[in-house]
Image (cartoon, rainbow, N blue to C red; front, side, top):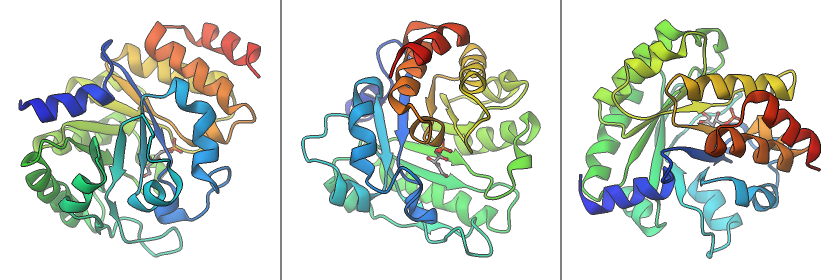
Length: 260
Ligand code: 5RP
């Protein structure tokens, strides 16, 4: 692996092998999401606890300070919206020149396996890998399910993760599910756990994150369960403790309760 690729990956994946990515990219298909109306206002207090930021070029340019120290993973797929018929009809939105100009540490692209646009989104990934590998930019493949949340089981997600890795993703982001070791066990590149809609309670979040990490995930990309919680800072601090200090779900919950 070239130095540039290694350097960028090491900015995202910390020296303990773990990473906490904070996604702020929801607006690219669902507009001004609750508590993400002002992305930097949401992000700023959480910065001490997160390792990288996931956002589009629009939010990066318009909302993030130029001295942002955290590495940025640029969301580079899009072209559809929550009110469209099919969320999977995505293309690549951002050129390689723009990816370089914005000093991106990595890029993220969604792939919709089993959808009408499976091939198109797989080729989005493959073509992006071709462009990005030339410049040492890691590609994070996202196993997206659109509105079909019931697709999130180990059989389906292990198929998706493996295909994304085979096409050249350096990191794969996927949902946590029961038997998560089957997902990580069949994926030859690091796996990050995505969030999904807000859970019933905090302990449920800590439990699935902890289970995912115990079963081979190297990190998380959790947005709404952090910044739509009444205590976002407490959530970020508790999740950081699970990831980087091996806190149990119970210990994480104590941190949550004790933090304002
Ligand atoms: C959307 C994404 C988002 O980054 C991801 O879903 C993040 O956040 P949340 O935890 O709110 O689901 O990739 O396709």
